[in-house]
Length: 438
Image (cartoon, rainbow, N blue to C red; front, side, top):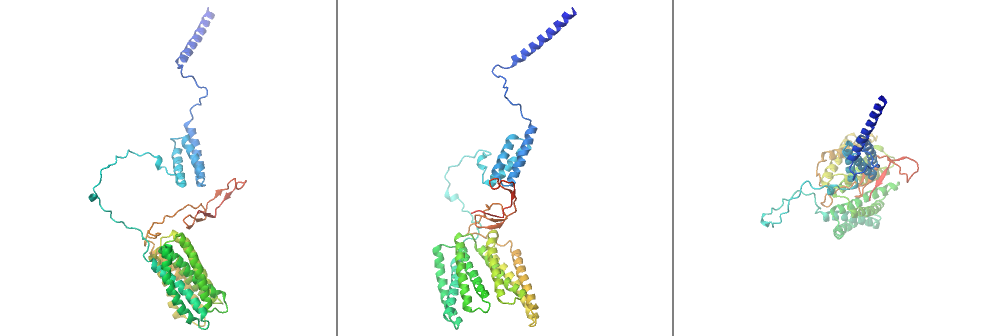
């Protein structure tokens, strides 16, 4: 009896289990079958960790300026964990990449609230107030003709003096003076008409004129430097005329690009003048055996001032009024030590010339620095190109020396980039030295 009772208990338990299973199966809707291929829900903690790894790699690619791949990984991180902390950093990287690639997100954003309906009622013209004229940047100068006349007269006068000195071989001055005056007048009258036909602004005229002036200075000094035994006036005139012609051609080529403002050219003139004067004063310190070394120093100073000015000018805010003050302080700083020379001059030694030359060189630099320092806020925002604000274009690749598409040279930064597998099979790093955009 006990065995039968035990069997009955087991049978009852099994029956109860089968009834319960049948009840559960019956609760499953007939139109929703169980999908054996459906993956279980992903752990949000694991998803956030994966998103953090994607964001970290995206940041590394962004720092290496691989913008497209960085954006792809950032988007994947947002998809992986849309509401986690990694999503905010990923969205920031996406925004930075869009900014670098010139992609605007404004069009994708819906307006915060609907725009009000447009009032189409006609406006009474008598009720419209006239706008108050605002301060405008310095527009095109009205002194185009004056600038063209001055530079035309200088160039024509130099050519006339050269021809006159060549004709009057025994007395070069008798031919140089009338020849210079005659062609100088002609150049002063013809140059404004020529620039009017070209449609040049004053900045363009000054660009070509500066090339003519400093080309002539360098050419004349070069003619003196190459002839050690003695240089005649005709040779100096010839060298200056050749240099001035080369300079005006180079300056005209720069003027046609119309990249420099009047303030930029004023900076070039100032730096070239300081460099030329410093070449002579440093020569006093050197006390060379041959006097031609003074000319060599002046050539290097003038050429260096022109080059530095052309490179630095587009990145500065300089106007002719400001550079006039800088040049004046630099000239004063270089001239004051010569007042000391009258008191310490000694024919038996050269230490007096060396002392004055050293003080004058230091005075040039100190005066120029003081001039830039005191006038750093002068004419802010007025260094414009033909009355239009000049917006700098920073589109050069990352490199130590950069050339941008607006013609501006600038110092960049040192960037270490991985070598592309297409360039070298081995892994390595590169440091770009020069990058250019045109």
